[in-house]
Image 1: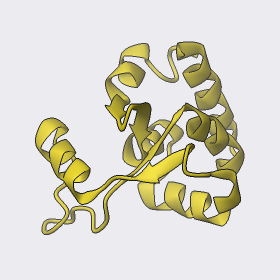
Image 2 (image 1 turned 90 degrees about the vertical axis):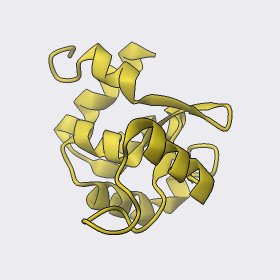
Image 3 (image 1 turned 180 degrees about the horizontal axis):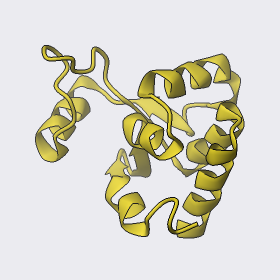
Image 4 (image 1 turned 45 degrees about the vertical axis):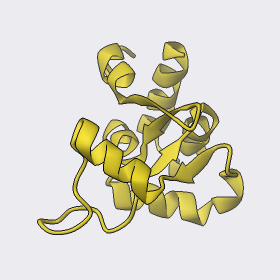
Length: 116
């Protein structure tokens, strides 16, 4: 499993926001091998599986701070994001494998659980 998802990649993607260890939707999409748009679409189709303590959208200030700190896409111009990103807590990340329904999603979820 470590070949599928290198431990360093996981550690670098974990952020501390609002007192929760979370991962950005875009980082998770890369791990799962899907676009951020499709990851968020799967979440919206299964909204009842993702309560507020599983995922939340960053505020404008939090998104601006991340843009500065880690270089996420700027919200306007040059193909950047139009909306603030979603972040997923550990429980939300675990739920993603069932929402995405792919072998890779299951493998990534197992690798992420081994990491925690």
